[in-house]
Structure formats: structure tokens, C-alpha cells
Amino acid sequence: MSLLPVDTSQTGVVKKIVVLASGSGSNFQSIIESVQSGRIKANVAGLVAGKPGIGAIEHAEKAGIPFTILDASTTEELSSQLHKAFNRWQPNLIVLAGFLRKIPDDVVKAWEGTIINIHPSLLPKYGGKGFYGIHVHKAVLEAGETESGCSVHYVNEKYDDGDIIRQTTVPVHPGETPDTLAKRILAEEHKLLPAVISELLNRQS
Ligand code: GAR
Image (cartoon, rainbow, N blue to C red):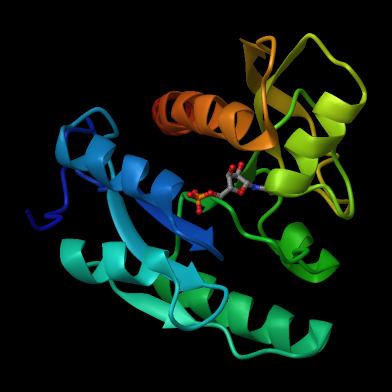
């Protein structure tokens, strides 16, 4: 199914989302499906892929979404490539869905209040540098936590530090491994992220 712009707003202006991803892109896919089903009333204007060959690019191709692949080794290059993508697509909301590079300060400033991130823990716990993907779940289990979850938050100049918008709690089961916990939390991410996107876009109108 292709992603035709959905205009259900009062103003006649189609809202635009840009997604940044570095991995398999299952969260990106959950956004695509929410747009296709009309749960998110917006158009996915583009994907910024952290590197070539990732699953997120395949999802974009299948859905007919334009994408750009980052090729930046310095913060300056990253900043310039992000500014270029955002200026081209003019998003109402920028969503980090498994994007693992820090957003440069000048980009955060230029798009303040517009960039959100999903993280697989109950922030502020298990956030910050080094806490990504499976490392988060290993640390949670090593600490003997009885619950974990996922958080969507605004992006500021520090890793995983901006204001929390919404969280979902997931219990840790006996005999849990990092992989089983990751899987159950990811299933919750796929519900939480589209719900928050929809809520924030509705708030803007
Ligand atoms: C997700 O679990 C997301 O929360 C996490 O990366 C995974 C990406 O999965 N993000 C972070 O750890 C950011 N600090 P996906 O590519 O299947 O959406």
C-alpha cells in the first residue's frame, strides 16, 4: 500500500513526519502502518537512515517513502546533513525511532520541541550514553529490577534526557532473558510511539 498524504485536518494542511532510524526499523514500520490505517493523520515525508543496508530503508522503499542515507563522520557533517533533510521536508514532528547518534546541539535548537525519541526503559533509569538496544535490557536484569518498559521523550542536548511525554510499564518475568524482555517491550513501543505521535500532532492543530 502506498502512503498517500492524508488530509483530515481543519486547515487543509497535511502534517508531515520525518523519521530517523539506524536499525531494523520495526518502530518505523509501526508508524507507517498507523498512517496507512488513519490512526496517525499525517504524511511520512521522509526517512533519514543512519547507515546503508538497514531494514528501515526496506520499509521506506516498500511504502514509497523518500529516504536519505547519512554519510557523516563528524558532528559538523551530521548537523549539515540533518539540517538539509529537515529543511527539505519541513516536518511538523521529527521522530527518532531507534536512531543511535546524538542529535547535534544546533539541530536540537533549530527544531526545539519538535524532536521526540523512543527509548526501551523507564527513563530516567537506564538512559544515557551506552544504554541502547539489548544493553539496556541486560542492565535492567543485572540490577534485579521487577519492572521495565519504554519511554517517549522530547530530545534535548543530552542523551535520553529531555522531558518525558509518556511511558509504558512492562513487568519483568521470572527466568526473563534480555531477548525475551526486549521482545515484550518492543511490542509495547509499537503501540506507544504511534499513540504519542498522534496526540502531539492533534495538539498542534
Ligand atoms: C528500539 O527498542 C528503540 O527503543 C531502541 O532501539 C530499538 C530500535 O528498534 N532505541 C534506543 O535504544 C535509543 N537509545 P527498531 O529498529 O526495530 O525500531
